Image (tube, rainbow, N blue to C red; front, side, top):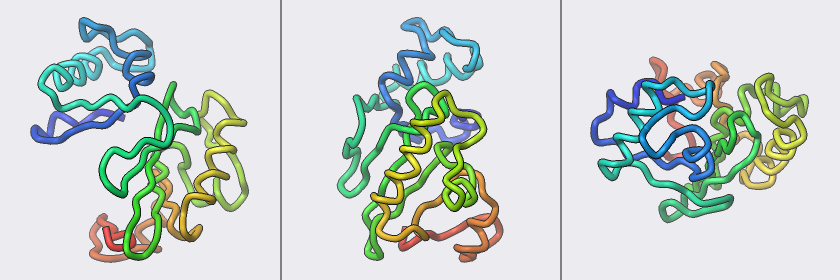
Length: 160
């Protein structure tokens, strides 16, 4: 989930405080087998450099018009976000919804720590999005069919 962050030396990261505290020790060590020790050190170093912002809880505005929500339990405190655009609220589901099929069949993702929480997150995404077509799963190649421009593996979603 964090591989490649080092390729963006100016990037800022917003992560749930509970997620960070669960996986990363005060010394930058990995506290759980689900995080690579190199990733734990990298994000701890980024935090020390002021590039990591800890979000404390659900339904938090991190920028005007951008809110993060907890749910889905893909990881300890995984989050997804809602963005107000001129075309309505878009939900970037991240790993809390892998595929459009998860939404269409109301089926939880395969890797969740809590199936009921994941299904509740899918329901909430439907309530948050201005239209179900504005929910963007984290791993579905159909995103590039539904949002074909500009192309070549890049999708422009609702005025972003």
